[in-house]
Length: 125
Image (cartoon, rainbow, N blue to C red):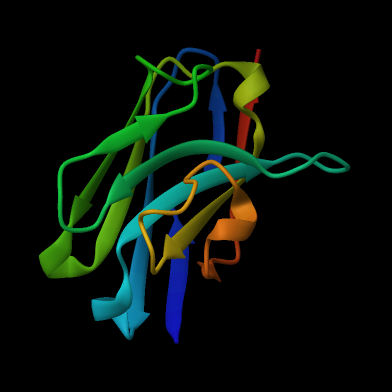
């Protein structure tokens, strides 16, 4: 099992920045990819970004490309999501996820094996 704990959410104004962190523990050697998703009440969970655990491949949703950056620190078992130029439409609960098989489709939530509890990001206009 892998446990994931997110942090870094909060209330900011449009144009501000936030950095989310996700610390993995447990059987971290099984992780091949980490992802960030977000979800609003009553809506489906939406892909934001993903990164391979052992390589530098990164992937982004079109809505965040150029504004968000995903990175990782393997020594700390931590993945980050740097969010710049935040917009009110970025308001959501953000979830960290871990995948044991990077050959699977990285945009589909059900392809991931483990999930964090989520952290709220609220962007005011």
